[in-house]
Image (tube, rainbow, N blue to C red; front, side):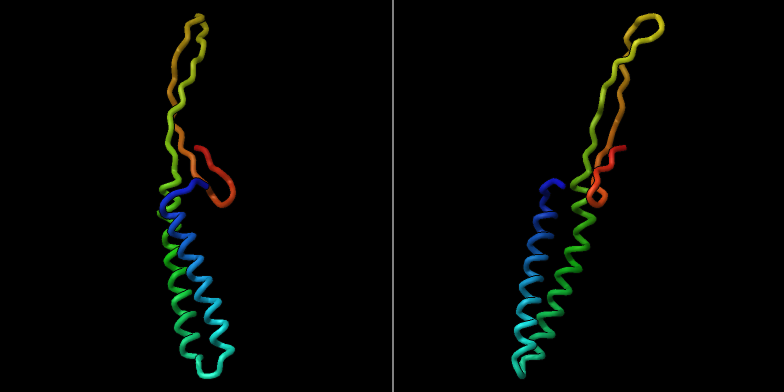
Length: 98
């Protein structure tokens, strides 16, 4: 994956959500702080859902379109130039080239 603005934002949101989850676990152990723990948990869920929505933007930012030029020899010995357009993106851990 390439470093894109959306990926940076996703990483920051996930880190912030982890902090809220950690605070929620701590508050659950303190008597009388259950409401604060629920609030922190709800905020963590909201941040994680926002991060998952940003995944679509990150995938679009990670899309690469490029042109490849190939030279092929004809039967008559002439060289012909062909241009092909390619696109590349990530699907999970693999890169897909089309």
